[in-house]
Structure formats: structure tokens, C-alpha cells
Length: 87
Image: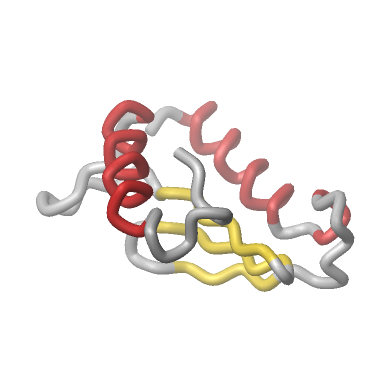
């Protein structure tokens, strides 16, 4: 990841971590991290941002590779939460 991409990502993380960034006024936002994602709980919604990582079994190092993962996940979970998932 280039220096400018890193700064852009840091700015995105700060933005999503602020309750003022959401039109539905969640009150507070909880930022959680997994090995592959940053997760923002802004009740009643949850937002997930893939980290640009490559662990071999998953590769989110490019937007295209991350988009393939989102499409696959949406098709596998769409029956369980059709109103909340969009690719």
C-alpha cells in the first residue's frame, strides 16, 4: 500500500469511527477489528471495510479482488438477510 493509500485509509477509518458521519445519528460508533476487516457498529447498522491484506486463503489487496469476495458473500448470505446485503 502506498503512503497516499495509507493516509486515505486512515482518513476513512477516522470518518467511519465518528457518529457524526452517519445520517441516522447512532449516538456512538464502536470500531472492531478482525484479521481481515475493520467493522463499525453504528446501531442499528454495521459497516465492514476490508483491509488490504493477503493471507493466501484470502486476498483483498486490490479493489477487484475484494469485490469478488463481497459478491460471493452476498450470494451466500442473501437468503438470510436480503434487505441488508447489497453488492
